[in-house]
Image (cartoon, rainbow, N blue to C red; front, side, top):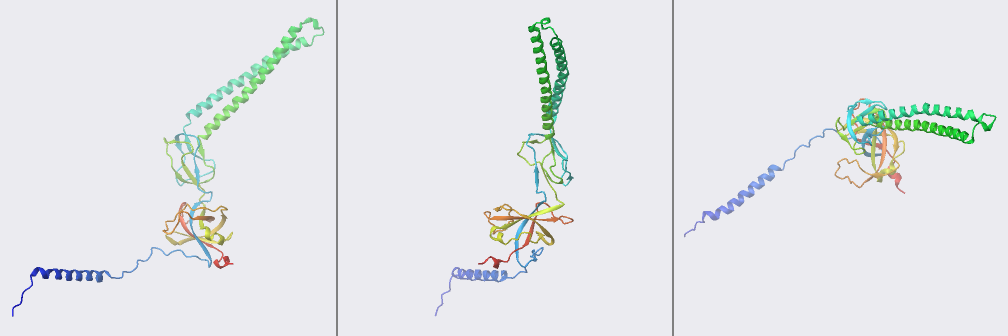
Length: 320
């Protein structure tokens, strides 16, 4: 009895298939391992209240962040402040080019000097005209002087009075022009509207500012800070006026502070401050609630986000 041997090529295909299945099984088994979950860098913040409304808060100055600009276009001549510096109300922040304004003030001062010197001149002419008129008005005999002469002297006196009034009005106008020129010069020095800390300086000497289109300096009072909390409109009814609240830093819940109620904005607005949460919708409307706290030595900065928990009405109280 004879046996036929199978060709080697026909045996290779099943062998390769079985080898592939083995490799695949090994890969699946080797990859099916459980790895330990990495612990978070910091524990998430927790609410200290039994009933709470949570929201993302944005730190701002207690005066709000004041963007100080100028309505006048011009080249910056000097910047008088640095970031982090504290300034008093009325302190200069930056100065625009003052050369043209100084020239205008000098011109107006000269015009005022000229106008002021015309007043005694016209006053002297008026005194002379009134003296001449008095000479003819006091005569007992009206025939001593013709009517035409009396009329001429009356007209001269009236003209002198008008010229004196015009000269005095010219002084008033020159003073007003000088005051306007000095005001224009003063407007080139932009000053702090309130006392506070310089948060940003976005301008350098030599730069051109287009009036009303830039934010050269941002300042605000930072010894006391505010937290502006966005509360979803669906939970706005739960917020209690004057309620307690607590805030902690994002990334370190151990750094926390008690908050003091300031106010709730009466207008519900579209949400602008986004936290990066994947479930967050940009069309959400929010109630903005403001709280304050003393900065002290807390490592908190204006513009930073905080997790805020507000004591609120229980959800069950909203059911009928």
